Image 1: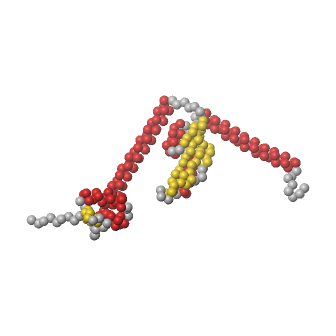
Image 2: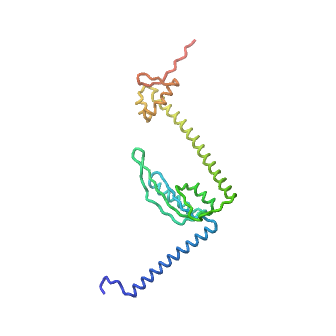
Image 3: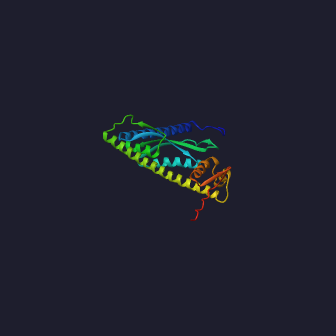
Length: 240
């Protein structure tokens, strides 16, 4: 037999038996897993497939975030993660509006119960969700009451956060407007400036500055003459 011989018939038979043995074990493992899942479903657990998507920048943060999301699900006692598949990172956008990166993970898991599945929806905000098994579920009045009350509590919590953020944003806008007004006043304190010169001084475009300067003129703090803006000097009170 030459250097590239394929071995004896006996060796080939042994290799075939080895492959068949591995295939048989693999098939047996799949059957065991399937039976185990069926047992869990019969106990009240829910088999679910979901897609979770992360969008943002930079690319490394997006990748880290999606893996962190899936790891959190895997470590949560309410769920048993069975499968996880990650997509490639996609880039979109342009130089003018900025570039963004997106990635998604398709996962399959067993949820402990209906309440756990609702928790999953609120906590991980999947972009899509599919209940694989059971095909039908019975919901008692108590189950529905618990689900709706939990949903209402979470909605109220979100509403509270949104209102709080609105107040914070409003305060930021008020403070930012006050800061900008002060910058404009300081910019023309020593000498009159054109709109372009004020824009260069405060670092904001001319179009964005116009409403603020117009308001200061209306309030009587700024004078405008021949395209030059200056502080309106208060006349000294005449002595008696």
